[in-house]
Image 1 (cartoon, rainbow, N blue to C red):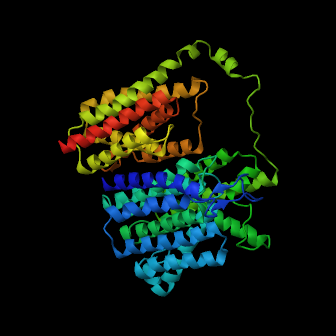
Image 2 (cartoon, rainbow, N blue to C red):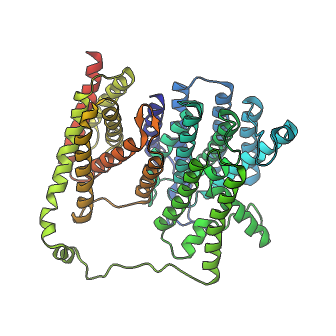
Image 3 (tube, rainbow, N blue to C red):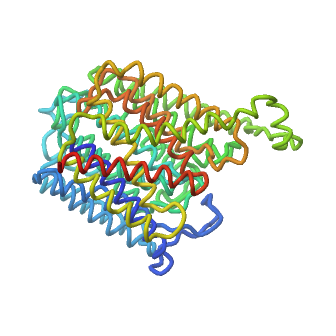
Length: 542
């Protein structure tokens, strides 16, 4: 239960902190200015790291018992955040950033006792501390910079990191048969990323900056080492290659190309995978989705080959990497470019409606079904579940108060508090209904969720003037569901993960459709959320 609350707390903090930081960014000099190497054309706030790091660290301080290793991780994260924020404010140069990275890694190595003692093909006894400690520094600093340099498109570094964290959560949870320190840290950081991606999906309103990307690289390196070197030493030491996936091979390829071209190894260039895809005619979103797809393939492979031999894992990693770079190189050498199809100019809304014919007359009914069923579903679950735990009740009470104050005294429109409350309420109700409602409700649930999914699909397809656009975040959601569904029998926090992921996606998309429409429909959903939170709080009190 604490892992779920860590994720939701981190997401909420991230979503609340980021709008405040965006307003401050021009005054504190943290704006990312466009240049020839970058893909954005207007200045963007470079403060996303504040939301990610604060959102991730606070839940750990609240819910996770502080050990030397966790203490070292928190201190290292703060050091990296500080150096990253200074770099976002004023370019420090690579050598100063390396100092911050070595300090952060040194804290977890010497104070936290973290080191890599097992590597592929070499017995542990042949890897003494005199070798393992420098190798740990090299590996962690390498991963920090790999994630830092992958942050080149909206949603890219955050989405890749989120997929890796999902894989780490699954493997760590199975390795110890329950919640452990790795799971808690990964869930908290996932929450921070989800809150950030709310503002970073193309076109981005905020960038994570070095303060965010270095923290994510540090976290991923830290977690894969703890997972394979401490949590379960039966895991293959080659597994981090698949879990970290594309960012690592990308930075190695970039360094190779810079060295081959006689360039400064640390000078930024346009030869990352995302740059090369853009040069081949891929759109911003298509490039991100292509990279998400490859990273998801790596993570799925890690889950499937958790205990396989080192050579099997590394061979598969090499094959996938080879396929990616051979394809890119061949396309560049032959001058191939993706031809984007343009919609015919004659296809106006009126023409589209005539083409659909009689279907256009019934587009109102699926959306009406969504608007009625989702608010009723939220309230019904709050009433029908047999009991409410203390954590859920207290959280619901606090959110009910916050939402009430926002609705009474806040500015008109859809606020961050409203967005966060709807999101959290949807997750709460899906989880509680799956955990507590009787099994004989299963067939009814299948019908309701199937009708909701169908109604959402029809509404997105037919409704004209709908303020809802498919983004790379939607593809990330789909990949997450597929990733969870890959191991559909995994139980996490007492529920089936695949079932929770699918239900949550349906309800959240329905809530998003309602919230993006007029104020009356949004008020109805907010009222249902307020009512559901109030019921949960009162049921525990009474």
